[in-house]
Length: 169
Length: 255
Image 1: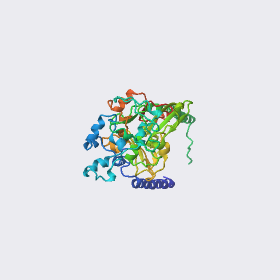
Image 2 (image 1 turned 135 degrees about the horizontal axis):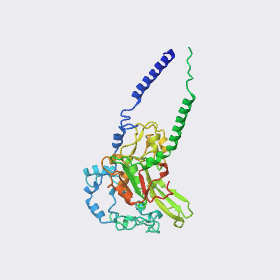
Image 3 (image 1 turned 90 degrees about the vertical axis):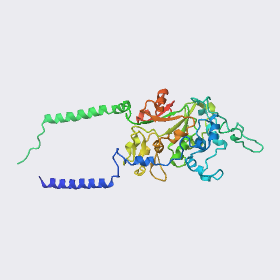
Image 4 (image 1 turned 120 degrees about the vertical axis):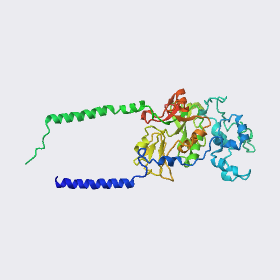
């Protein structure tokens, strides 16, 4: 074998060895077990923190509101749709007496006109809704500027909840 | 002694040349059918294979899905980071299209086009399509984004280098760079909830049940019922991304 070929082979072998060692050092743990990614990324993605509760957590304490809501048009709405994420509230609020709940555990109370308008404001894209089982043809819509806008003299603004019970509209 | 290296005959030369040219021609001729084969192929046949359905006729554009997504997944509240958002498409009588998405629809929509000019108007909730042949996972140079066995496209936050290739590659605009982490972030179909047997936050919070998800391999699942009963379409079918987000009543104007 000519000498230059021998030298080339040695050079290649050194490079190959270096590559294998570097690859072993640099390649992250569990890479390639399931594909071209770290297999451990899957359990890492599973570990994220939850903020919304599981289905019936609210009913455990707020039975009367649930019963009230079941009779009305909002019966199929989940509590958190309006009140925001409540996992912390559902987990820890039971330890406190009524009226002593810290602010961090209190849920959002949608009382302003804009809160109702999110779903019920008149919009051309909203007219065609047809529910499968509820006996109504559409989401009721109002123009917030025309529907009881308030007293023009006293500048008093009516809230939707002054007339409508949000749990049983 | 001098060795004669020039042993290639004229016959051998033409033989090798013809094989090479023929091979290239056949491969080139078959290449366009790759996509067709893929499109006709059944999805991952065993185990769970998640698909999503959205009924545009039922969507009232309340933006509760977009809000729920931000709350559940700690997405920055600034109005340009979204994993899930709602767009209002308004097609005017003269044919022009107006697309609006104020803060992703979280604060509700205000109708900007007067009633007399509107031909039709509808809401389109958007989110990651969880493509079976994701362009975004194909471009990742380090393997930090991948499709799981269930057909969910996930990001490996601890391995992402924040190079933004995938943000450009996604034809649906479903990825963003998280301003604090510096890595890419996207819809995980609430993987952490799914694995506990719960619905993803946006599906849980939809007041009109316009969003459906389920196992495409299970003939009795909700998503298969939805697909059978509606005329469904994916966005940008021409890109052949293997999108698994099916819209009922999707207009061709939606991009």
